[in-house]
Image (cartoon, rainbow, N blue to C red; front, side, top):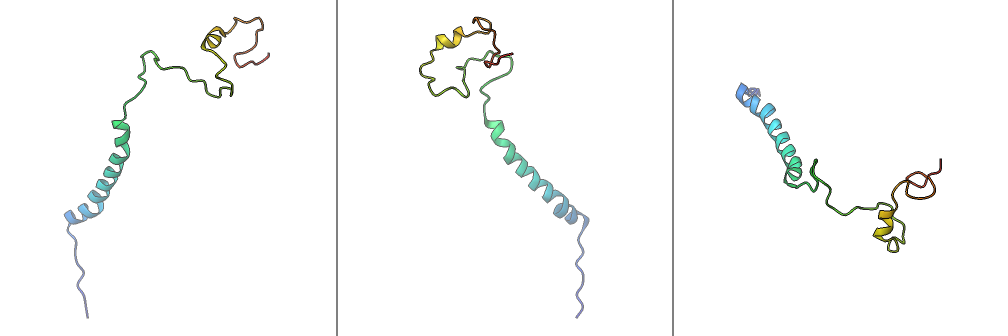
Amino acid sequence: MVTEASSMSGAEFAVRFLLLPIAIIAIIWFLWALPSWLRRSSFRPGQAWTSEPLWVGAPAESDAITRAAIDSATPGSGTDDRGGASARW
């Protein structure tokens, strides 16, 4: 029993091995990029910052610290000249 080999045309080869993988990769990339395209930016470069400042790593008693105390603690306003993170030089 002898079977004949099926031949594939050049167009069929191009569709199966070139266009389908490229289309699959393009669909995956599109679905990956879509959320970032739909999300609006909260800050745009060149505009002034309008949100409240965020103190990362604030002490547990941050309720006792008032906004006036934070604003008055400008560098160089105190009597001791320590670094910005209370470092001593």
